[in-house]
Image (cartoon, rainbow, N blue to C red; front, side, top):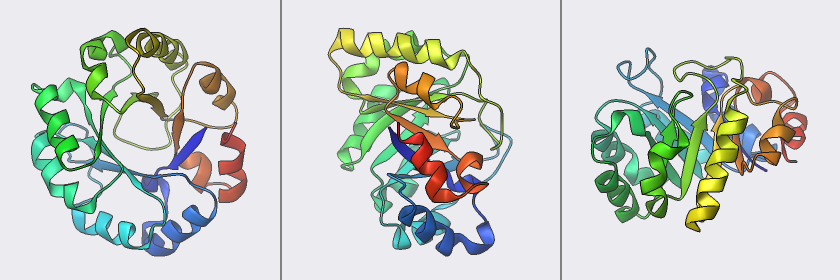
Length: 212
């Protein structure tokens, strides 16, 4: 299991040191939640702050857009060359076009599904994706409780990927901890985002407990 700690849960007063510490603790990616105050009722990282994280990170960035006007934000962050940029299918009218734009920047394109959005909604896009991110909480704030139905949702998505012969990986974000990680692994999940669970515990031990 790959682990991408969410910087939304770190101590922003020590952002540089938190980034260094989380990389040294065994993180595989650094998850960046970009919120615009419109698509979700919260504001988080702008490109200047993410650039500061990127300068000291020894791990690739995984940028999750929770925004309106996805194309604008893709262009805003593309110069940082993250490994992934993901956007919400619920907010995008032209997903094929945007996926190609992300790929044209030599970045892996990904789509995010809210808890109530079925995996079948992206079946027609699977050939164009490198990753599908399943939200296991409603997006907008950290520290929420895991929604158990995402386990069955991940299983359905895995079946779709196998049927299509897609190599896209499955990521889950929200309320992930050592209590549900084995169920997620068994459901076919490849990477998890963990915020509160990692940053409120010993970083190294918490990350290790998720690498099942």
